[in-house]
Image (cartoon, rainbow, N blue to C red):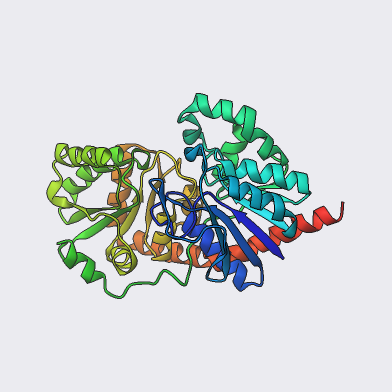
Length: 396
């Protein structure tokens, strides 16, 4: 089976937002299962910097064949004339095209070329059509959907959703759907390891050995709900003098200043650790050193950091507008709460103050991650979907 994956940015664009690591992890496991995977992408890294990669010739990453193309005008749409030409001349070589993008050139280029060539295609969009994101620049998005994206969605052989909530929000928006399926995001079991040195993280960031650590791991950005988390932690800190909040991640300097102001206004400067982005052993040690993970976002399709927390067996306190929140609550791996200061505060206090309940959440979290959220298993589910679609086309 030959699969083409089209995505605006790809490894090694580590600074780019979007699901590039997840996409590559899935592609790697597809290759491990005998699938021939080719990627067409651009040579862009955030913020619109050029990757030092060869253009137009294949680069192999974990067995995945990747072609990088320069971006043409308009740059913000990630349109590439060379990618378009390559797609036009090669799309018939593939059994199926999987595009991870909407509102950018990739989905339109794939849809037009695949339909013309009679090749089936799938679209993944990782939360873009959820209720809150659709409200952001709503007028522009409505126009773009009406004149561009609706056609792409209507002609896709399948749409990929990462949670039931994402699927529900998409349908509620009245957008077209020929076929849909829910396959979760996941983590690569080969790139994430349970740390045996959590004390190193505590020493590095001056966290007392007996402190109870509440971990937020993600971009410092308004949509992540830090306006709720920091006041909620202030309430936790008054009741739990041993509690420390770790904010691990980076953001735009303007919003980082707002976060600093919130910390000072709530009087918790001495109880908060701003670590910046964490990678490798530092990241693994942070999860291992923590007692509870919190995600108070306004919206999420399915946060990778929350899945990583489940992998490490951490209880997860998550707001109800986040994809995967219902699944976490259903399996008993954490607590789903409204995005309200008091609700987040009370949930964190419950996890920290009820060892038996927390231990049950830890067991459920690890079991859920191991059984449903590993990329090796997720890749096999995609192979099943690809096979059904290809057979359905050939049987017409």
